[in-house]
Structures are given as C-alpha cells and as structure tokens.
Image 1 (tube, rainbow, N blue to C red):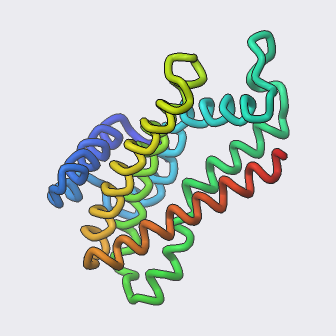
Image 2: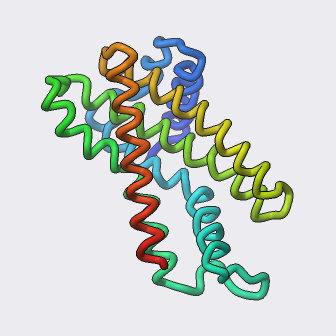
Length: 196
C-alpha cells in the first residue's frame, strides 16, 4: 500500500485547514480502512526527518565527523529508526485503550488517520531547526527557540484535530495531546538510553 501524490496533497491541505481551525479540513482525508492503513505508510515521507535525527544523535554522541559516513554504525541507525517509528505509532497504539475506555471507538479511525498525517508534518517541521543547527546556520539557542515555536504550533494543531475527530471538549482533548507528548518523551529517553 503506497501513498499516492494525490492523497499526500489532500492530506496536507486538510492538515493546513485544521491548523487554521477549519473543521472542513477533515473532508480532505481518506477516512476509509484503506486510508487508515495508508496513513501509517506516510511515515516514509519523514525519511528526511529520520536522517536529521540520525545526524543529531551522532553529534550528541560525538561521532559526527565530516570524513565519516552518516550510516557507518548499524546499531545507531537501528535504534534511531526504531525510535522514529515508535514515536510515530505510540499515540495511535495508546488510543486503542483510551478510545475503548471513553467509548470513542467509532472516532478512533478518523483520529488515527489525522494524527498520522499531523505527525508526518510535525516530524518534518521539527527537523528544520535541528538541521539548521547541524549545518551551522543557527546557533543551538536559536535552534531551540525555533523548535519551541514550531512545537507550540504542532501541539495546537493536534489539540484542534483531537477535538474535531473525537468530538471532545477542550480539556479532554488537551489531555490526549499531553499523553502523546509524554509517550514521545518516553520513546526519546529510551532511545537515548540505548545509545548511551
């Protein structure tokens, strides 16, 4: 199941509508079972973000050298890839139980589809400040400031999308967004723990 260019275009356009607080953006997504599974395949679009994450982890470990290949350690490549994938699926997996607990099973598929597409955009956007820092075009402080600003926008987008897809009020939707942030933090800590 590959994601078509048309689906990418529609899903990105729908995400942009949600960013602007327009619920009609939900109509742009393929809310079918096929669209559900293809939304997980959209992780391939985040390959540039994975490369930036890999370079950033190598820099953190003191292994990023101009004369060395970025892919010369299978262990680092594998752990960062697993962390990248785990961060993508953590909230959809946790939402299986949350949706059952709060009787939101019918809204689960639309929530996951929209969340997966937001994750694609979020990973790509949040990799930009790290890339700028790695290239020497932004000092660490400025890159952190950019990351914080982009993260606030992505969190607000996820909050509005959660409200819209699950039909929740503001506070429970914020709780689900915070759950996603916590899960991604746990994934990040686990990944860094494995890398040392």
